[in-house]
Image (tube, rainbow, N blue to C red; front, side):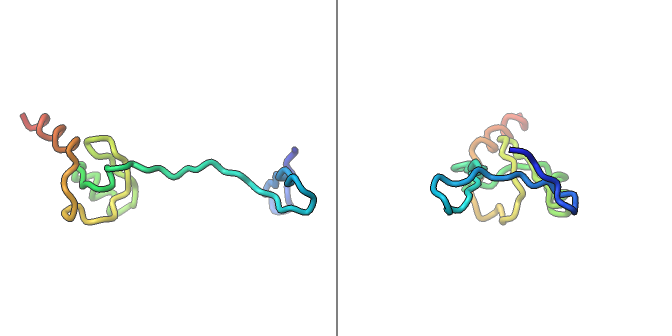
Length: 93
C-alpha cells in the first residue's frame, strides 16, 4: 500500500479491502482506553501548585501513588487513596 497526497496536502492511505466483494472496509485500531481499577474510587494527594495549574490549563497531574489524570471531580466525596496516605505519612515523619 502506498500513500496518496491529496490536493490539500493531506495524505490518504488506502485500507485493505474486506474478505467479501462489496463489504465495507474496516480499520482496526487498538483499544487505547485505560482502566486504573480502584484508583478511580479514591481521592489522591497532589501538589497544590500542580492542582491549581491543572484547574487553569487542563493538564494532567500526578498523585503521590503515581496515578496520572486530569482532576474533574470533587475529591472530598471519596475516601483517600491508601497508597497516597501511606506515602504522605512517610514524608511527614
